[in-house]
Length: 612
Image (cartoon, rainbow, N blue to C red):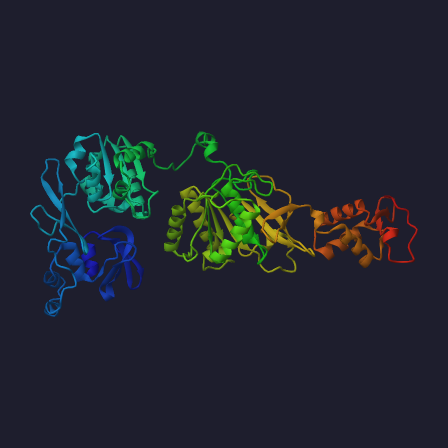
């Protein structure tokens, strides 16, 4: 019966599971927050007003029926006798809980229907012009229609209370019956009753409640009246807490009318997003609005990059250091950061205490005072987890990013964002496209932290060590890999760019991590293989002398797990420091090396002539 009641009132039920359906809440709107279990004859608004009940309670709250009337309507008269012996749990109205009535009239002021509201318990229902409960087929109109018709502008609120509060400030204000509407609901109202036609030719200011249904409803109205109204503006109250509206804004200010006028004047004229851009549109994009996050194509505006490395290499430290530099607007590792950004970190692997300790040490190392960052760097509550294989969590994450106000979002890490298979190209692309879509809709940029897979015998290139499907490395604009470099005393990491879609590929470089501040300092490559180590390798592995440079380079690479370039630089530095001497090789074109006589450990030293 509960599903029939909803269907009779025009609600479309969506099947979620074999035993569960959803639809907009009849009392507070939304999209799919009203969950129905037909087998149990129960329903619950899970993300809105919290209404709970069965078909009898639904009729009582929707139509103002008594228990007996609702029981007979649902053919459950057997419950009446038992109910009569129970003490009602609902407080009877003795003047403490009055019914507030908002009449909706036509152009001539004749009442068409009345919206009735009570607050304890929270109830909404509509009555006909003579108080009748059934209003099916009655024309639906804007609230205070004659005033809307008369004036050249109108403010569209999300409820009668908001409209009346604005009207008290001498504004011409109205609302839609039932509050926030989905696109489908609004299209049906417009098609059947032409409910928005009175707004044609007027300046319309849409006051959006600061929540998801409010934003969706505001955009739905804007799309329906664009091109018909003289001008459309959406006024948002996103400086207030979630769920706040214009009434909350009015209560907050001593001069609410002036503040509202300022917001209305400052709001841009709304135009629908373009489906297509001409070449001139692209060429005319204002650069100051789309400055890169990091220049040289490393991190373009509205893009996504990937930072990958093996477990325990320090990816979380690197992303925190990067976040601080972006929030302050400081250059990072020699790459220019054009301006400070609002940054939000979503991470699930470290406790808040761990993040606190790292943040304190880094700020001390960078000489940043407490409060200098303001609200430009925030960290999301890790209790809020998201599985992007689920549709509801995709929307939850989008809403969370929007609420953060971030320009740059850092996700640490990919494995915490899904329950799928990382080797499945289709699944991974589907999940990563969610992050791309959040960027596209909210004009954000993001950094995604990811892991290396286990090293394989035939896998030597860093780019092939990134774990999972190829779609993971295909997705980002830039891929940055961080790997360990062996050293007896220092924590040294190699930063390597394996992909830069929008710029030249920077050369790999080394950084040394300060164990006290966790800050990464750029260092020269020869630090990996100090001159004294080159001498030791020549002495211990090659018997103090070698007449083949390639043999020497190969030996250093094997011992120190370094690149060919690093080995060559180390040899050159060792020669400059006179730890080793360069000699004639096997032939005139080759080089050899030996330990200087003052450093030799052997008595049978050769008579090779030193070149330098």
